[in-house]
Image 1 (tube, helix red, strand yellow):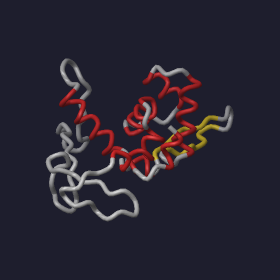
Image 2 (image 1 turned 90 degrees about the vertical axis):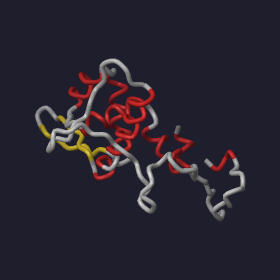
Image 3 (image 1 turned 180 degrees about the vertical axis):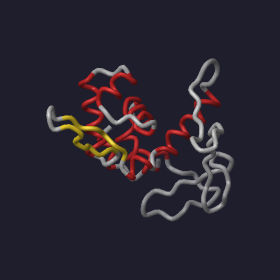
Image 4 (image 1 turned 180 degrees about the horizontal axis):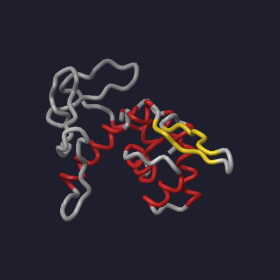
Length: 158
């Protein structure tokens, strides 16, 4: 995945960092208030070596910050950074897709802590106000002009 981090596509660059399930689930749990290694391990059922690697990567890339909470014995916790907090809408967009295409049966639900209402996320384009996925898109590779509506976009532009 590291070779994706140099791609011009921001989706590819982002997936290089958080494109595996464990990283996504760690970020979900961090947003739910988990901060300590043992909390993540218990919640996820992940082996310690895998968790250590993912926490290190998320910390190195600036989504989590390591903070010492005990000197004896030395213990650290992992708290969300601004970049980590900005990742919540991504998680909710994935969850909304899952509700539509992978739902059924008992599923986890998310509620607004202040209003108590269930969260039903929608991703919109700031400029047009249109819901993402309801209008066609075009992709322009770096250094290229926006392709005309009738032009094909090369497969490698993504």
